Amino acid sequence: MTATRIGYARCSTHGQDLAAQRGALIALGVAEDRIYTDHGLTGANRARPGLDQALAAVREGDTLVVPKLDRLARSVPDARAIADELEKRGVKLALGPSVHDPADPMGRMFFNILATFAEFEADLIRMRTQEGMAVARSEGKLKGKKPKLSDRRQAELRRMYDTEEYSISDLAEVFDVSRPTVYRVLARTKAAEAGGTGGAE
Image (cartoon, rainbow, N blue to C red; front, top):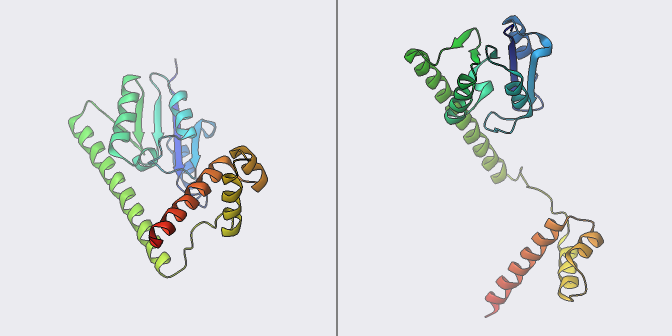
């Protein structure tokens, strides 16, 4: 049975391009039709169709090739879990030109260091994003999602619900929203009424 090199590439946002990673994988001996990709998905998200397809495609003796470890995983536990799964199946893991050797103590240590750095970088990006959003919010540049229903329509929905003549499904159809939205509006208006009552006492 001939061993095959299966490639995997990923980028976090839809604005990014996978061309460079594809080129790197082809240069590492992966056939173009053997490259699986995920576009617009972070490495912290384990539910990645492209990765699942790549893992399903490799067989014993094959090699899964990724340009860098941070394309495969953005957390130490996830990176280790994937590497352990491949080892159990007799599949090699190549990080760029280097093949990870789980039997080599130095190789395992290097792999863990790379995984730690990938996780640390992901945490930094997350923290910077949160800080940027906080600054934008304080400057009035981040308004948040616009409510699906205006205050007046929310009040009308509540009034109709209180008549006990309309079901949740009826209200969803009348106001052209989903059932979860109806439940959220009811919870929100109930909380507002409770707050108003409490203030009057």
